[in-house]
Every structure is written in C-alpha cells, then in structure tokens.
Length: 598
Image (cartoon, rainbow, N blue to C red):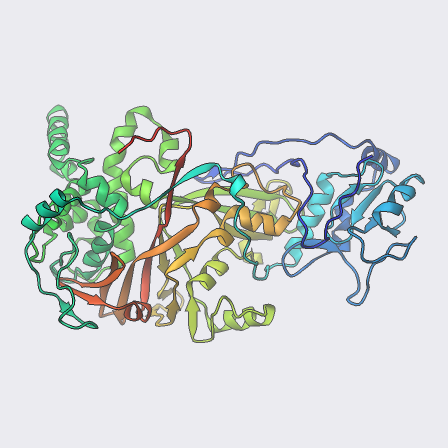
C-alpha cells in the first residue's frame, strides 16, 4: 500500500499522476480540431466494485455537492463556518481529509485505510474534489466524476482573476536560449558606415539641441500621398521589426528574381492578367533598399500603395482607412503571393503552423477555444490561427462588476482607465453564452447553453494587440470612437494567458482538459515580450490622424508621416494607443536543430 505524502492541501505540489482520457474535440467550419493523445490509467477494481454494487449509481450527480473556490479549483461544498475534521481523531490540520462516498464520513489518511476495511474504499478529497481509493492509496479517475467537476465550474462562471503562476523550473526547459545581442561593428565596418552616411539634423521635442543629431540607419520619413497616414504608420512599424528587416536585407526575397519568375509564368499562361505580377513582397524589398540606402529625404511609397489597391480593390480610394484593416489585408497580400510556392505540395499544415511566408513566421500564433456544455459538461476544443489579437476596452459596468468580484481592481484599471493586462484578462475570461447563443452539443445532440473560454495556445515572435476603439451600432445606425486611455507595460509576461496556465488553474491536479501540447513549458519560456512600436490615433472618427512611436537602440522616435522626431518614454506612455507591437525578448530554437557558427 502506498504511503500518503505530507503535502499542504492548498499550496503544496500535486502528486504525480497519469493522464485521464481527454474529450474529443468537435471540428466545425474551417477550424482544426484538437488532436489529443488518450492515455488511460490502470482501472481500479474497487471503483468497479463500487459501480457494480448499484448499476444506477452515477457520480455525475455529485456536482450539486461541489463548489468552486475563487481561484477556480473545485472542493466539497460545506457551510461557510464549517471546519471538516476526522471522525476518528478529530484532526482538522492533516495533509488530506477524505469524505467517504458510501457513508459521508470524513477521515484523515491514517484512519481512511481502516475505514476502507469495512468496504468503503472510495472517497473524495475534501479540499481538492478528487477521487481517492483508500484501499489502493492512490488517486483514481472516473469520467462521470470529472464531468461533475466541470459542471460545478461552469455553474460558477465567470471565473475571477487568476494569480500569476511561478516561472517554470530550469530543469524542465526543453529548448536552449539564444540571447539577442546588439551588433558591434569592427573598425573596418565602422569606417564603411561613416563613408556611406551623411549628417541629418533632427527636430527634437524633449531634448536639447546638443544631443546626438543622427537618426538610426533606415529611419526615414514617409510622404503622405493623400489621407495615407494609416499606411505610413503601419509601414514604419513593419519595416523596422528586426525579423522581417533582416529577412529582406539578407536578400531572402529578391524582387528581380521574383519579377523574372512572374514574367516566365505569364508567358506560359498567356491569358493571365497583368495584375498577377504585382507583388507586395517585391515592393517591400524595394522600400528596404531605399530606406537603408543612406538617403534621408522622405520616401513616397506610391508603388506599394498601388499594389495594395490591386490586392484590396475595395480600399482603392483616397479616403481615410483603418490602420488595422490595412495591416490585415497587407499581410494577406504578402501571404497570397508567397503561398504559391507551396501549392504544388498542397500542404495545408504549413499554413497553419506559420511556416509558409515571412509574415506568418513573425506574426502567426494560435488561439484555443473551449466551449463547455452547461448541461452535460462536454467540452469542444478548436484551434484558430491568428496574426493579431483584438481586445475590447473596459466599460464602466464591466469595471464595477470586476471590482465587486476581486480585491484587485482589474490589473490596475479604474473607472476612467484601462490596462493592457486587464484587456487580456477579459479576453481569456470564461464567458457564459446566453440563451440566444446556444450551440450544438455533440453529446446531448441538441443546442444547449454553454460556457466559452479563449486562451493563447502558441505565441508569435511578434505579438500585435489591436485596441477596439471604434464602435459600430447597427441598431442605432451610428459609429463612435472610444477615447478611453489604455495603460500598457513596456515589458509583458504572457504566461497567465497561455492555454497551459489557464487550464492548469482551472482544473488544478485534474488535468483532463490538457493535452501534451498545452502542458509543454516551451511556450512559457518564450513568454517574455518587450514593446517595440505603438500606433496611435488622434482626433475623432471622421477626421483623425495616425502616428507611430518606434523604439530604436533604447530610444523612442515619433514617425508622423515625413517628420521624424525624438521623444521621451513619458510621451509614449501618455499616447492613445491603437495598435501595440511586442517582440520576444529571447528567441528559442530546438536543441536538435543544427545551428551554423557565425
């Protein structure tokens, strides 16, 4: 018989255990369903005897006897002032207390073994709501009991704020880490840089004129071609992100070779239209060559604008456009051209993993959606690729509800201020779908009310957060802008919003909803981000203006069309953020990969 470990019932580590079966995911639409590996533990003969004693006895009905603590973990329901204690020794401070399913008697581990001799082997951990066999001295699993726990958690939704999880231990790291270090040129490279450079005088907002007047190489203004500030602001952020910048400057996409291949393809397919030769990647390659040529005069991205108009013809006008809409359609246009090289292989998995083109390698992540039926507890899991995350701003009624349910005011939010962490917390919060949003349950075979929770399965190398500042009301036939201030950190830890963290917090030691991929700590090791660019919007919905704040060499620069000015951190923090770009602090690579020595 196994000895009971002396663990604290709340803060202590969970004992090792095998994985219970995972409910199958229900695919729908074009989404890819979760493919979890089922690993069944050895069956317990005492649990089988317990079920055979009464064929109609189901543990699913025990959800009425369970409650959920503020942190989301289930426990046996009891009165607020009730303190459970062992019926034999009256001990209430032991490592575990178990309630017998046959007679409801509560015993400590020592007396639970003796109580099992009377034929009462199956019990429930009072503090953790986990099945335990007193005769085997080990945890056991039952699908009906796990469904009861899920139903109890669904009834208590929405879940309150989750605590921050500790960092993963060093011994669990499966990937080596490669620190991103600044490049220090040697004397010959430094001389070549100075020979190809010319002095540029910079308009400075917050620094004296005696400061260094030189701009970083490649930082160059973009001319406004007629209400194209939305295009200039996004291009300034994209052109200076290190990963795509290094990709194009290392000639990984050569526009001359690409144009030659397009002409050959056009000769083969004589009926193909001329617009098929347009390539946004080629236009980006030309812009990189122009920006890093040493010329400091403002650049006009007319060729890129024309190519984008050909790809998204519904935006082809000189009217004001949304910067986020341009960002999404631009990435789609680059992906559409680069994806042609994968069409002969018909490899759809390449698209989903983000390995099809440079923009998906940089921006592509994966969202996990769990929809749980509130009647039977069946959970349907789907994965969706994404290149950005759109976040709703906190409204006053949402703030008041959050203030009532938590001692912390929503990650520093107040009635007039929102925070990026608060927006991410609401994005990953459990949400009860109303009666008008019933979804089909594969287990019940009818539409039922359900509980939906989003989480982040895979983190991108560059995380883009879109703040929803523009509201459109079809009922009132009107639109408005939300001028609410959003406080954002310069350094961001995404661990609390990962699927592995959320499911571990939700299920605790019962990890029936976590598969091997979600329990992997690789994502947690790559969860530290630092801010790189902020796109802001000033003005109202009808007449507004976009600008970009860029971080280069630990110095902030404001890109306002053709004007480049140096600003302080306080100016950036006080800006009205619309899109935020964060870059991973540490890049990871598989230990099995061969790394070429430089």
